[in-house]
Amino acid sequence: MNINYMSPKAGSRLNRIKVVSRIVRALIAIWAVFVTLMTALAVLQFIAVSLGSRVFPGESMTFHITFSPHQVYSFPCDMPWPVLLLGSVQLGLIGFGAITLIRLFRLYEGGSFFAAGNVRCIQILGFIVAGYGLIQIALEFLPPNRSVEIGGSLVFGLLILFIAWIMDEGRKIQEEQELTV
Image (cartoon, rainbow, N blue to C red; front, side, top):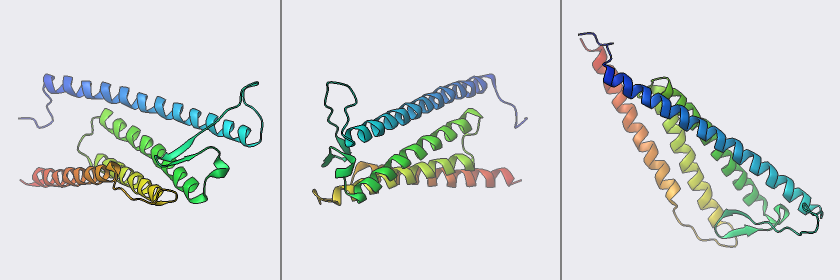
């Protein structure tokens, strides 16, 4: 029996996975471009309002910047620097997570499912989600709220890391079995 032989049924499943991975990768890329453009537009509007001009003639604009449910600011200059710094790191994590997801789905599209690169991508995603949760906890601890709640993001990130560890161990067991005569 040839180990490299792929049945027609498995080939059609692989093709479906490739198509869906390509679609999901494209949707993530479109979402990332949309978020980037909306963030750039918001920054330009905040700068214009901070300088005292009106973005739309005849209308005054109010903005609300929220990085955490208990912290709402009208202007970037009203934000304490730790909030601005942590919020910027959060946005960076979201962008890095989108890039990592695109890479993971590119690996799936190439037919790689249980390789070391996939495990690495899933581990990175776990660290990103857990880091996002830790930043959310830190933002909640800052004034005016000063109450800490363990968020779902931290727990979900740790769960992703656990799943990545299980996948890596299974990959190692599979490699050992392939080397056994």
